[in-house]
Image 1 (tube, rainbow, N blue to C red):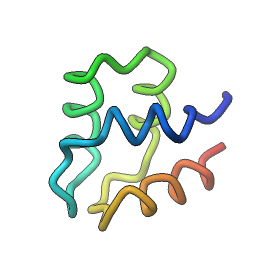
Image 2: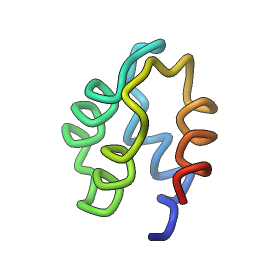
Image 3: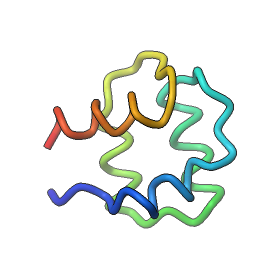
Length: 64
């Protein structure tokens, strides 16, 4: 699976109030029109709290 484009992902998660959990990342991304591939990537993240956008990107990079 290819990683989501970073700037697109940042836009999708722009309203996230960090720290947050995976479920909130998925809710916000879906609300901002994320495609199925991006939602799939986010749903594969470990179910933990993420301190910020950079933590999400780092976790996504580990799951590729």
